[in-house]
Amino acid sequence: MSDKVTLIEAAKEAGTTRDKAKYWLELLKCDLPMEKHKILVPVETVVTLKAMRIAIDSGLTPSAAAERIKLQNMPATPASTIERRSVSSTPFDAITQMMARLDILEKAVMRWVDDFEDQLHGETG
Image (cartoon, rainbow, N blue to C red; front, side):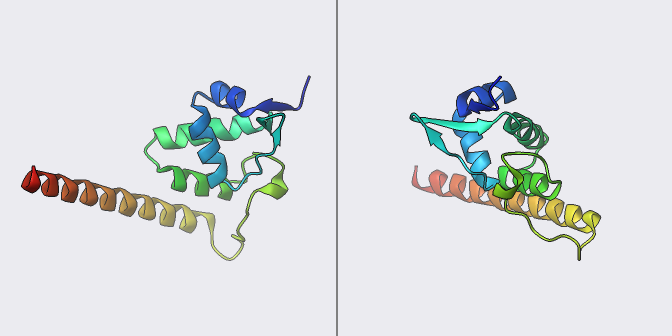
C-alpha cells in the first residue's frame, strides 16, 4: 500500500474539493510536491483535511481553522513541513480564546463589508 495519495483522492476522502483542500494545506504551510503532474500528499493528510472541514463547518474561517489545527499539532504532511509557533509562554486556553475572538471579529468585519457593498449597490443600481 502506498504511503501517498493524490490531492484529489485526499480531498474526496475528506469530503471536500481539490481546490479547497489545496487552499487549506497552503494555509497550514504544508509542502505540496508534484510528481508526474499530480500533487501527492501523505495518507495522513486526509485526517488533517477532515479536521479542517469539520472546523470550517462549525463556523470557523479557513484561516482560524488552520491556526487551531497547527496549534493542536494535528498530523498533516511530515511534521517538519508545518510552520509551528512556540506556545510554551502562552497557555492553550488563552490562545483558544484569542482565536475565538479573532474569528468573531473577522466575521463581524465581513458582515460589515457585505452590508456596505449592499448599500453601494442599492444606491447605484
